[in-house]
Length: 513
Image (cartoon, rainbow, N blue to C red; front, side, top):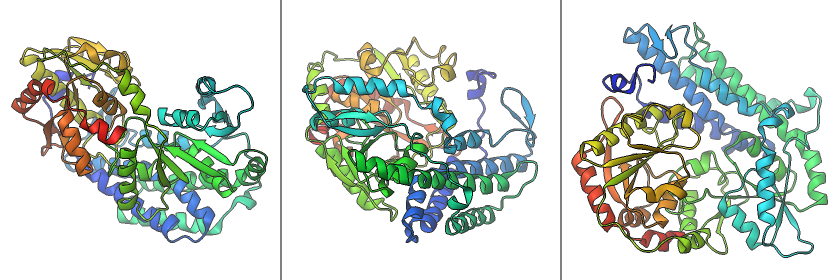
């Protein structure tokens, strides 16, 4: 897109396969997967391996989706794909991203360099501040903890001792690790997938990738868990049996938590920060986060606890759900109390658009939201704002500054790279293209006028939606035949004009405290 230039790219619309197809593929795969490895399994180790390795379904669904895109391009008589250069369809590396994602299952101590201990030591130092002197017991921990997790440690008067997930792994002979029952399930899993989606190896090894990836990810997860059982039993016997776990979508952490539980320990997790009103009916909390994994799952506030309880009840997929509980006090109260309470804007002259993380990831719970559809939407919003005389600011996602560099320059007056907490007051109004970002929850705590572009595919808890709609003005998003977002310019202008008069914090009092 950069090579073409945004203006040229915007003039051309072609979507070989709609991204809703990816969601359908994913739902099919994860349903098969849970039925085989979790719902029908009486083997506790196989169940824990299944829950820990559940993320493989996103990788395989992505690969199958790419195979259908390639087939449709051929059917539409396209011969080349243009990336950094034009390449024949058969030579293009359609599986580059799935291969990259699969490496997260390479549980080798050599990957320790990717495990950022400096960041964790910084967390450890900060969590020790403000605690009383003297002997204080510790929780064992993995991952970088969110604000609710840090508050939990302060409330329970515990320090943290961070664990190296690789430190307890014992080498075992391959014959000791082989699990015939698990191998049979893996074989059935990938064989059914290959047959259902009619995958064959031609110029591109579609079938081989599905087969090899299934074996690799699930066996790596199983072997890591088994190798850790004995040493973790010894660790638990010597120290506190409670593990504070974060980053629960990360395969290494999921495998370690499962091993910890099988060894007799308890694992607790925490909701993502600022999701107090948007947690309901996002199955990502079940499929790839803590609800299906840990023993106890702490929410940031009683209102969020209500939403997560409802999610666990309606979207469990038959998996064992964690016990959900709120923290003793809300982490959002202190933030809210420290923010200015007086609305000084009566009209809007400048608008900040919050940027999407531009990457290759497809989100099963948000099938219409992918980098290129959002990019077209963002440029459309910015062009509409400029045409109506607004000063435009673009808040770039902090992890995607390289990807977005040079793309938005001609559509905005300023690109913002500072944290949102330090920059939201630079504009009279902030526009969000979706609610599934922790920044949205923080923004609702402020006095800043907000506009939310809301698509019909976004699932809400009805009462929470009503409260959110009082805090920010909504603009309806639709999806056209090209799988692109569309919206009414008139509706957007009306929402921006009304936003200073819609700063109602009912949602905060109802769900954040």
